[in-house]
Image (cartoon, rainbow, N blue to C red; front, side, top):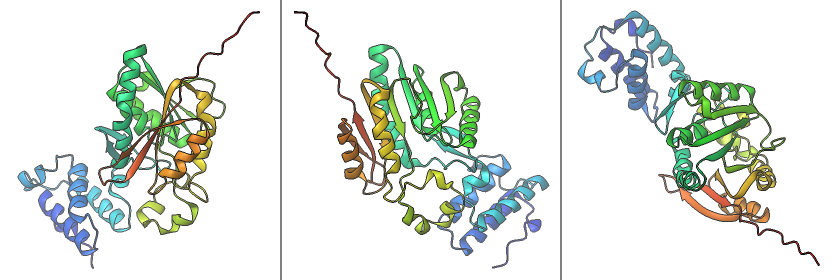
Length: 303
């Protein structure tokens, strides 16, 4: 199909309809939503204003932005990559080539651990969190936004991801309670935490070519590749987490489809207790919770 000539669009509404028609013709599954989001965001209006104010004249700078967006979307670039940001748990987070787009499924993890954080705050007045493999910083920043008494250390192997997370923390005015550093999981970390959270790479290497082009072409491989069986990151976290948690601390992890039993076995073997399974909105087992049992104090007797 010939691409629409946005030069013929006199109004914002006409440009919106042209994008929608082009996306539908290319068979994009979310054609209508994509057109609405791109047009509204790039024009600086709310989506509903496309219908109520669609007769507004189309400014040349908006026309240029929409033309670039049209080209990029038809080349397979995801909408939020084009826009440079995505909303997660009510927060707008900037993206970079080194970060995954935070997905709605990961919000399941936030819902799972907020009660734990609030209970910790109620008992000790604060809660220390470490987020492993931070990407945009989505998980840690969402938790800090919901719990003013919490603090979070974010760790990622990618220096660019660390800078992206720092920028998001500053933009959200959460940087006073958020620190991001480059590192390899918990290696070299001496501090102890009340809670460890992570959405690690969990896709088996052999499965990567089966993913959609929107994922393989635009999401960073480091954030996807979980090794031969998809469990490399879980092994590393399970082996390190016990010595980095306060007594009674918890670990919350996002998992892939069908990984519940394998990941659970790794953490039980490492001395953790299974603490719960949480399903996402699609009914998929998405988050596992583990707790570190309190260890009885060692008794010393004088004879």
